[in-house]
Length: 137
Image: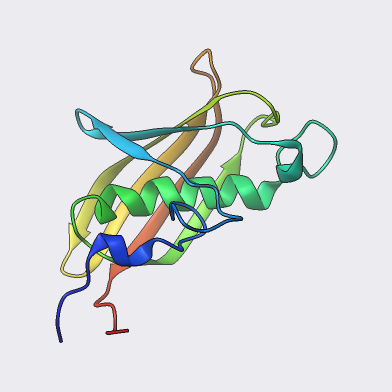
């Protein structure tokens, strides 16, 4: 089966550039950390002024998966745990971070966290990601 390219995921909800309702997240490496930024809008809230927990989980899932995806490893989330530590406000810039912890064969363990502008950790996640081959279109 021919190998797929990262460009084939342009409709990904988290990082796809062509998804009109997507988050359009972009990431870059800072040493061993993959990082990105995101400002939640009012459309991303649960309670007024607070980012919805599902959006927070999505941000963590994306930054953790992209720690592998950015290296050309396609993965799906096999298991993910999220710890919501503090409320995540809307309208404020967030820093998304992740790093690879361990891997064995096709299973990768990754951790991620979301910080506010002062570096306070608002949420943490750990995930087990399973590498996959994408089907031809």
